[in-house]
Length: 196
Image (cartoon, rainbow, N blue to C red):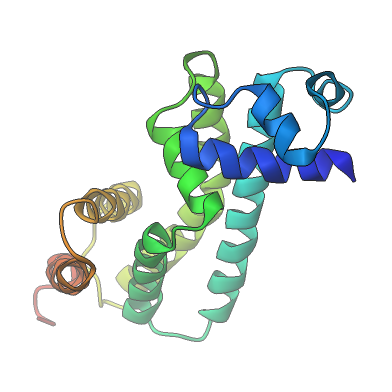
């Protein structure tokens, strides 16, 4: 289907060059169609960019649902550590979808900035809910100290965001050591004091 091919080509090109660096004519050429043909499927470049963004978020949500399902019978620390490590590793995958999401969220087209952030926040609700349930389970069991769940979720995301930036500063081996060290300190920080 031409609409799918247009989105695939747009994903590759937007991931590589960002929104401003890709004219519709380049996307059309990659698909083997003329530029006006894109308008039969998408109203505008903005519309196409949003469609690609939504595709990436849907894939991210699908993958997260699967991972959360796989973790149901694990302990609190293993669940949290696995979610942290999986998200951290995703930053290194270099997949076009991951790269596209990074570019779209860090350097959004100005007119789409609010819409992209709003959609990303909606897509993050699944992980918010899973993290909230895990943190509550840990507090109920006495493993984690009592803290507001929203604060624990925010700290988890800040940890992820920090690891995202760190990948640009260090070699992969050094970065992995940092992931392990940061997780260890974070985990000790949220554990009940008498358990450490």
